[in-house]
Image (cartoon, rainbow, N blue to C red):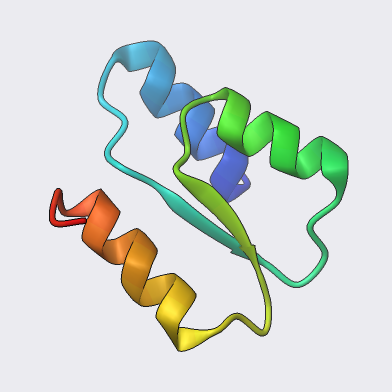
Length: 63
């Protein structure tokens, strides 16, 4: 099961935590699928540390 599939399953169960996806090959379809199911963001590798710091703050409720 992929991370996206796991996230979709958690969403269906009403138990999905704030989610940040990271991919080396983020296609528009993958981005739409991830964020369409409630993920905060899909970051592309390599990502900027500041981007991860920002999204971790958002996930933890400390923007």
